[in-house]
Amino acid sequence: MTSGVMLTETVDPRKPSTVRVWDLFIRVFHWSLVALIAVAFATGEDAERLHVQVGYAILILVALRVVWGFVGTKYARFSSFVRPPSEVVRFVQQSLSLRAPRVLGHNPAGGAMIIVLLAMIGVVSATGVMLTTDAYWGSEGLEGLHEASAYLLLALVLVHVAGVVLTSFEHGENLVRAMWTGRKRA
Ligand code: HEM
Ligand code: HEM
Picture 1 (cartoon, rainbow, N blue to C red):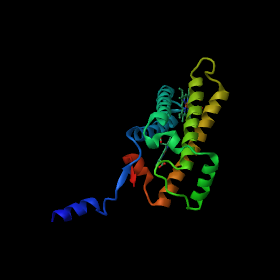
Picture 2 (cartoon, protein in one colour):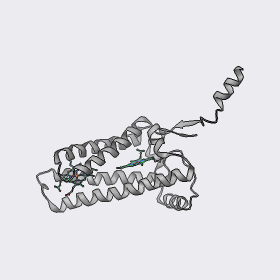
Picture 3 (spheres, helix red, strand yellow):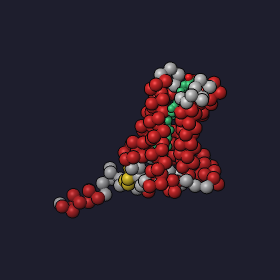
Picture 4 (tube, rainbow, N blue to C red):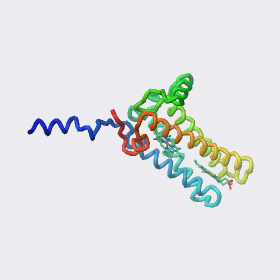
């Protein structure tokens, strides 16, 4: 009787064992960033005060993420997911033919995309901050650059989400849910 109970507890097939991968900071960071960037897009045209405040919040989030990339938990560290370009290219090729290995943390392609996304947010924010200064206030060239970089960021986000969907499909796991719960199949 007791051993039966223990058995169902340890090898219950309905509860496959999972491990914690994304820490609380990463999860709060990711979904706040998504929400704030959505608000930034919605307010860029005509709600400038709110837009600038949201923009600064995005900058602070990204700065904290960069620090966390050096001092954070195992899978949050840049050293755990930044790979040389050759490896990134090979991984993309493997992914496109659905033959990429499963990676518990960010895979090489995802890792490269993270760096590109963070850098692009940096460009959008830097041009945005410059637009608020006396020197560049009303500069049409810089406004154009700010807008163009924002739309380039949007295009990158679409590729990012496509990569998430492809990888989820390839390995039969819901990576979006994992970014919410922090846990993945062991
Ligand atoms: C990821 C963050 C951001 C996104 C996606 C974003 C996006 C946009 C977009 C789409 C516009 C409209 C451009 C136009 O129609 O001319 C805009 C305008 C503007 N943004 Fe941002 N922005 C971001 C961050 C920032 C930051 C951090 C600041 C300043 C601290 C800022 C300051 C401005 C200003 C002053 C304008 C008005 C320029 C104009 O009148 O055209 N933005 N932004
Ligand atoms: C403005 C839009 C977005 C930006 C800027 C963005 C940025 C990022 C960044 C920087 C990471 C790395 C997380 C970290 O280690 O800090 C990440 C991971 C991730 N994002 Fe996004 N993201 C965006 C939208 C989305 C959306 C809409 C989804 C889902 C539909 C999504 C799903 C994911 C998932 C599942 C991961 C983890 C990938 C993995 O398993 O390696 N993201 N994203």
